[in-house]
Length: 319
Image 1 (cartoon, rainbow, N blue to C red):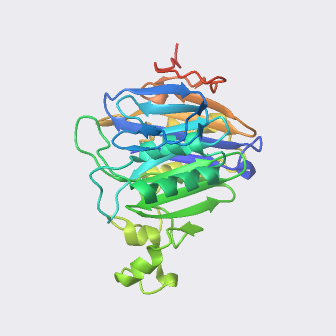
Image 2 (image 1 turned 135 degrees about the horizontal axis):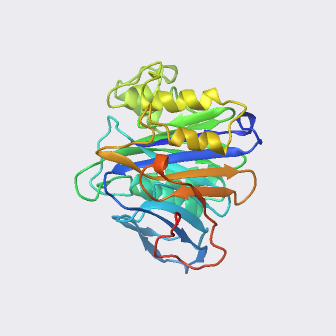
């Protein structure tokens, strides 16, 4: 129940890349904005994620994270290299693992380890292959799903969509792109899991590579050829396209505060955090809200940490 978008330089008024995301979580859940400085680790160290422990890398980048307080991972964030990532819940035909890395863990790991958007994408798919994705995604009730990701830096942007162990990725080359809670990559994308097409043919999901359509084959409820404009996904897409060539930070704010398509969500699930980033050079500029409902709050510019200091307490972004 989230929405993420990116506008590339040909779509923005100042030729920057603008990224935005609302994090829609269970009502009442606390979501913090925290910063972690770059760190160096000894070889062989481990890191405890939300449910599983994995191998740590020797160096992690400084990050700003917007994260549910109860989990290790993050819904969205940015790193010192100017990489931003947001994830979305998606429901697929593939079974959910009982445990593994949450999509939110993968967001944080991609930011901590990825120097560019493409490098962060590679981090995520390597971790998917090694550890898999799985585990309960809510604090007080059972809620499981797979994940899609929008990953960007000032040079490029990618959509990565998953179904269990399978994945495809699409490079965004111009204009705007948004993702919601549905698989959206049609065909085979620009990159894909090495076995996904062969396995789909072998199991009778399609008859050939030309017949392969990731979103159609792996969506739990199938996909529509055109997204209804009144849906949340359709509303975000149409608002992004409406501002092609004149997309600005104020545009991003207006989209994330929109109620017509329930982009700013109120109810059983509600928008608990929001991020807008402008990427024209490293590390970029990043604005966050750490309270419910962007329609009622102001965005505040948050700086990346300049030391190895770790802020364990939430950064207060609205005074």
